[in-house]
Length: 409
Ligand SMILES: CC(C)(COP(=O)(O)OP(=O)(O)OC[C@H]1O[C@@H](n2cnc3c(N)ncnc32)[C@H](O)[C@@H]1OP(=O)(O)O)[C@@H](O)C(=O)NCCC(=O)NCCS
Image 1: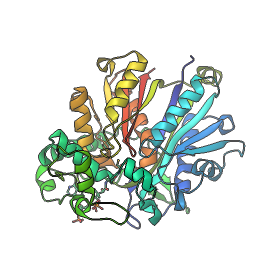
Image 2: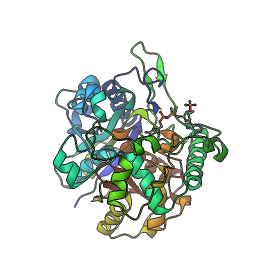
Image 3: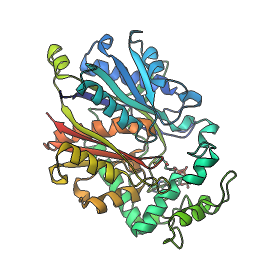
Image 4: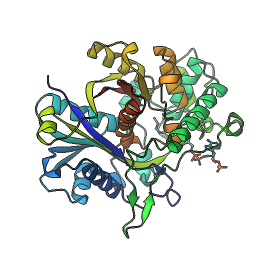
């Protein structure tokens, strides 16, 4: 099979995802994605008419994110009308799946040049977004009861024995690493500043990190999902904690350890990655930065939901004929601290090589955009640290995991 090469990867800064507070929240998500697409085009210097498809992940299909946000962003960007766009939904793994699908299209010989990534403005969720994952399907709710992700993260901590101090310690390190990478200018290569309609700058740096976060400063934060776990929500048979205990009878009590400081930040943002065939790159004088060696997914039990990054990573390694010792750097999405702690424990991987630039706890997790951002960070960090191979994995709603192995070129 032929190879799929990453020529470059860019992203917007992550703005705080609160309406009227975040510096991107007044901008339409299509406008932001359009600016990121043009940022990629200007950085690489490709002709957008060559792009056969733009694949964008988006975890919300309603309100300002409705319909096919990929195609609308292509049109908003002023790219030729011949360039198509397709939007896909694999919950938090949408952006990573977009890059994986782009790689598959190129590897199979069906496509020569594809842009993949995603967009999510969490500040602009419409109220109907809040429905449960089962989307009012009573049969599914009975067959596979699912609870909000924060409860799942707390359940992982409970079963895994991760204490409040463990998850807080992880969060402090995420903030420390993100700050070091910001101060070192390591994110600059990927950042596309986002502008307002009048041409003034809206945002050119990540605005979610909280420098100065310490174990002591996190100590006072109240668990975010304790009340939610105890509440009886309309349409559900029992409170969420009781549903969790029914599924996992070994649990006496869900230990609610996650809060605003050790959960992924709610933010706005967009990402774009150029994936091309070797023939296209050579014909256009484009220098590849990395090759996509392998992609995989895995599914696990959907109530605990966030446990599949490990199985997805293992399947990805097996399919590539590699072992974990072949991986120099790991980007494991920090959806919640317990997700990464479980991953590191199960795969016996040291925190020294996981999320070396921090992650979503400090930087934020703009759902559909994050996968493209993590792959871009992995490429930048492999180059900076002179390493060769990275594995990116994410947990998603519905109990799935996405994984990608990339090799620096
Ligand atoms: C956990 C969560 C519910 C918290 O949301 P929130 O309460 O709106 O969070 P905020 O940013 O307003 O922070 C709440 C408080 O914590 C404080 N805080 C947050 N991070 C902090 C830090 N690192 N250090 C100290 N204080 C911090 C804030 O200052 C704020 O305090 P205030 O109310 O006195 O101003 C939200 O971040 C969340 O849902 N995250 C996960 C998103 C998700 O599920 N994504 C998909 C994953 S699979």
